[in-house]
Length: 407
Image 1 (cartoon, rainbow, N blue to C red):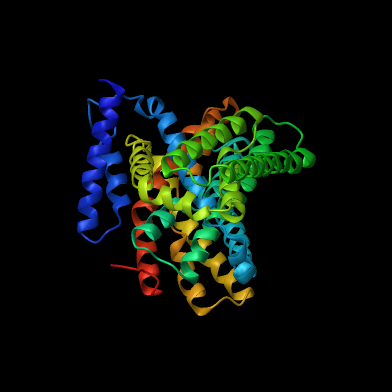
Image 2 (spheres, rainbow, N blue to C red; image 1 turned 90 degrees about the vertical axis):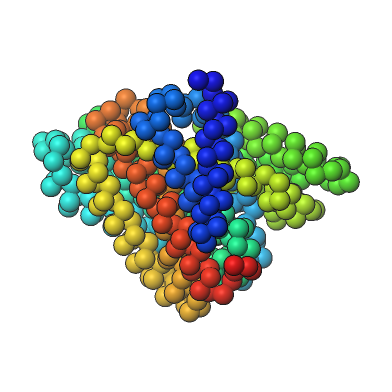
């Protein structure tokens, strides 16, 4: 069947289910995800097995728009007011989650049937390290979608959005370090502390530099186009997003981080940031979220093995334990407000987005052939579960904190 026809059917079903879930007082993105799962090639015979490969560029553009909008939520004046609290919560919850998942998996994975028992260094430790690194992230797009749908604004909303955004930065750092160590263990090479530190540092630095440069150029261009229509602005944004993604992929920088930095530069230094991000929220965000979450639901492998299913359960539980413990510690040390201490952890339940891409990249690396399948099924499965329950958690905490603008 024609790819565009299939995409049209997928988006139509996603839109209908999203509207139905909204009518039932649930966030629309749950309907989008459900549509992706229901229209999985393993269920629907008219959907080809390689549909996720054929729609990869569409998904990348959607991720670029979402990353850009997330970067736009990081406002320097907010960081000055509550920066200590946000930084403390981000570091503690990310590091704690990484340690809890890695240590917990090392203790539990030996009891999982089907995992080679004679390969501690080449299977157990690499798999647990990578799962720990990928599990430390949060999906900011869910909080962003729910926040815009219910027009929330306040201390808890700002904390959840900012911590979620910085979570991806720390997650990329954790992942980069874990990959270097895991590859050395699998190939039985001598571990190099220099490569473990400087390789991730080079990627992060290059990504920040590229995003800052693209944001600077965008701001200079828009100064000359201050009186242009929103249609012109949309074309300009799309052009810069695709250029930034392509340059990052070409130079070895991290695409999502580069675009987040570009969005942050525009939000803080553009002469009219409200026109840029307000236009996206009004005209394109609905479509972008529909595309991203519906296609994300299609990555789940319904034929995953029993070992992968058991690891998935352990992973989801350990991640939640790490998030709640880390937020409690970070908020307590920074003396955050009672509302932030009480509600922030539940707002960090959503999981997915960037980690699916990182897991797929790992699977494509021949060095991780033994653990690639289990790794992808675990990450995608956890993303599906947490993306279903995450919006409910986020809506609930933002409502209880009194920050929703409408029901």
